[in-house]
Image (tube, rainbow, N blue to C red; front, side):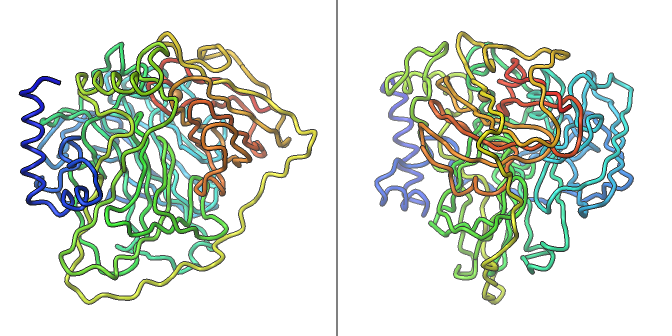
Length: 508
Ligand SMILES: [Cu+2]
């Protein structure tokens, strides 16, 4: 680093350090003053965190079209569904029919996928079903999934990263009687938050400009956190218990979520709905595509006090620091970070403040604790002789492959009998994290060897996406019990997916 650059950074850090309680807390904890990373900016002018419009699934039209949106800093062009950023939240009760018409007014083909839902082949958004500009596609399915937070986004092969990044992503909230009976925080105390990172610099452009270098290797990492479509989002909260429904809808960014003052997160649900019991955690790691349903108690806050939902700094051991698999380890990591700074995105693992919560001055109310028993999670029962399949996720020489192969639209890679539980083994032999998503329902994480060497507390319920670190081998139990047809397994780092880290499996 040259001397002038160092002095500039040091000066900025010092100035912020004097004024900001966050910086003081970091300094007291022996941390680096946060503004150095560029993503922790408590002094920034903040923008109200909106909540996406809620729509019914019963007779819904989603128009994919460019639109002008406000990301807080000002107007910008986005690719939207119905002109909204993020896309509307679809709220549906278990057992209800969804009838959704997609209209494509984008300048290129598109198709939508309902991430986590167990839907028929024709409704799953396989990229071979992508529709041309001016065409429409009718989705009809019954929502049979457990209550929980799901989501939807484009699945156009080679363009999923661009279309999702430029604005097309929304939540699906499934409700059922079991969940309603729990008396969880509701109304404005039930706050859905779509978390993303964007590469904005000091501007507002959401244009997706993927380089052929680091962006293809690491994925399209941003430099700015965006929550519910706004930069530096802030929300006034009552001093009581909240339910935060969190989705990591980033292209490539992994979040190590926690609250800035150490306030605990009580995890009640994940991808496939409620856990059996609540679990209290300081941190939850979320790869792209994963969801976390958490209770947070703000009742001890003083009026006007601020707390931040933050992605804390982390390192993934073995993560490659350079393209092509060279430069593993500390030195390589350093070079990788330098390269990212140069390219405009913050490195994987950089700290970011995601949302600011400001306590209101209304009287505090004691938060109702979560029930000891939330739900019974339907387990996937595997016999010892259950079929096993191994999927090796590799990244080398700017290629991302599964078992050495790149995605082909019509090739069937795996044939799976319907109704037969199987043990799938996901091996990451690369130097990069891969969040692995399996379509058409939920699986169960059974074991992890290498890396973290255990099933994480947020992986004990049903999952549709599991984060697999370098050198990890994760075993999952799958059971395709409902629909026959062609479905997908892929990396949910959208650049890895677009580059071919995806396969077709046929449920027969
Ligand atoms: Cu990947």
